[in-house]
Amino acid sequence: MNIADKSVLITGANRGIGQALVEEALRRGAKRVYAGTRQPLSHVDRRVTPVTLDVTNAAHIQGAVEKVEYLDILINNAGLALYDDLSDRAALEQSLAVNLYGPYGVTQAFLPLLTRSRGAIVNVLSLAAIAAVPFSPAYSISKAAAFSLAQSLRALLARQGLSVHVVLPGPVDTDMSRGLDIPKASPESVARAIFDGVEKGEEEIFPDPTSESIAEGWRAGATKALERQFSAFVPGNTAKVA
Image (cartoon, rainbow, N blue to C red; front, side, top):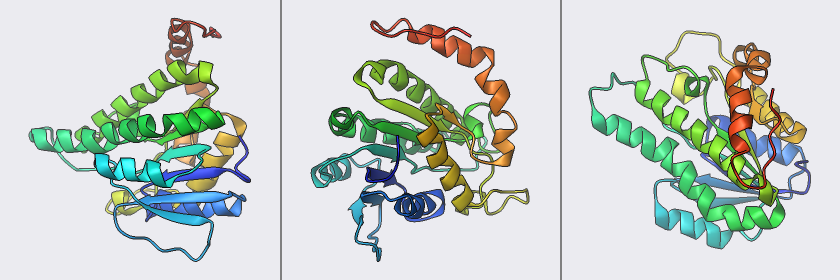
């Protein structure tokens, strides 16, 4: 999947990784970049088409579908991070609404276009999807569920020629982690690594030094091997058993 001359939709495109993804897609020669944001957005590059898109709003999603004529790559980047202790059910429900049901709803809505182009789905998650971050458990739970969603979509959509990629970044210098005094990758470097991973066909993309340190172990590990075995249960799929 080469980015040049492709049509890309990016949710959460107004800041952080999403904003960096818009600029990186343009740099790589994307033909059209649909920038999904909750608030109005303007951009000097005519290849950018702003799309009002709150991923929890069904009317917004339908409106976006009507605006997008052709789509090669969907990047589910919009996310929510809350600091909680699991004592408030509302925090968990809000996290699931944005981080799980959001990408689910957007993906389902754009599947006809993506199937037509034999395109790619990219879900930007977090290392918290693999191991819970204890000061943000609702976020971790929702990202773990979104990881399972991506694995399921990968197996179910393989026969239609669609690829599903999961991005598992460590700390990134965005508003979500602004208060954490730890080393962080820049959004620009993460965006570059995401598109590099998509172009290389990597199913799991580890886009920064923290996450990259576990990449080899993950790809050769039992969990990945088990995913390949389970994917063979879908009629028509073949699995490479590690």
